[in-house]
Structures are given as structure tokens and as C-alpha cells.
Length: 226
Image (cartoon, helix red, strand yellow):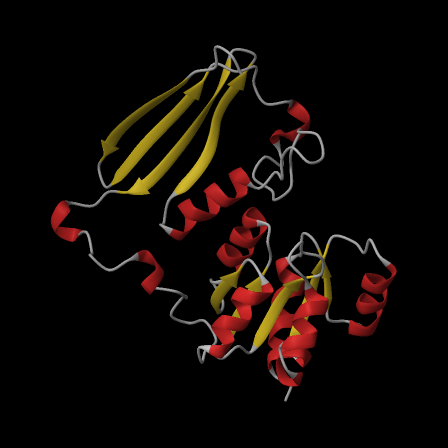
């Protein structure tokens, strides 16, 4: 908005680095403060926001052993605080963060997420790679190219409806074994064909946003299918 400003302040405090982000907005409504970091919590009209920005941001901080909290909010603005472990230059690794794909104790299962919604895809990857080895694609064509390159997947999460072709295209082209191991992701069917596909998949359907305590065991069950 016109006149909107944000101020950034950073300082090291022992073994932590703290960054404060302070804006001059109108504050965060009380009705959403308790669920501010939940996926899909938003005050924006439908089609103008997904409510995933803060969920993704907190997930990124958590992966780096950091935190993101709301320190204060009033009618004069909001202050958010990010904290991360401090590191001296000699301690910084040259290995990209993506090289450490999964937690050491994660099962040796590979999961492919296919979704054209970047925010939702990022949230799913952030949540799932605590337990599995996760790859992501934003189209069925990209996913099939990854499979053709030799990557093996024990389970696939595929969005039902995508502009470039969704789950119906995936099932037609992916082969019987991957089709059996595919879980549908959907916000609801908008066509008769989509409704029929949901019905055919039975228990292998998760409505968005998927609850991790239900999605994780479903992935493990699907991965055991032959």
C-alpha cells in the first residue's frame, strides 16, 4: 500500500542472530493471531492470497534450527522476530542446503509431490522431508521426466486439477506401479470426471490442506504396495 514501510534490524546475541522486521501497517486482526502461522490462514479475498507465506517462512526457519514469532502487533504496525544460530565464516559449509535432504532417522522412502501451487508444494516438502526423501514437480510432464531419468519413488502425491493436466494425465502416463502408489491431493472436484476419479481412489485421497498425522501413515502404507 502507498506509504507502507518496513524496517529491518539485526544483531548477534551470543550464539544466536536475531532479525527484527517492523512495519507501519494497521496490525494483524485478533481473529487470526492464534492461527497466524497455520497453512491457509489468510484475511485476503479468495484468489488474492493462499495464506501460506508465513507457514513457509516458519518452516524454513525451523529447518535451519531457527524460529519465527510475532513479537507485537498494534494499530500502528507489527513486529516479527526471526532467530537463527550464529556461525563464524570458518564454520559455514560450501555444501548446498539441498544436499541434506532428509533427517538421519527418516525411513528410506522417496516421495514425489506434483502440484502447480508453489506455496502448497513448498509447505508439503517442508513438512514431509522431516520423514522422507522428497522431490517436487510443478507439472506432470516434469514429474514424468524425473521418473524417466531413473529416479525411484515409493509414493506420489498428485494434485487432482492442474491447468497443464492433473491426476488424470498422470494416471494415464505414469505406469501401473506408480499409479497404485499415488495419493490424490484435492481441494474438491469441479467436474464429473474428477469426482469419479476421487471415488475410484478410495482411501488414497487427501483433501487440502492435508493433515500430517494422517498423510504420513498413508504414505507409508502406499509405499508398501507392490
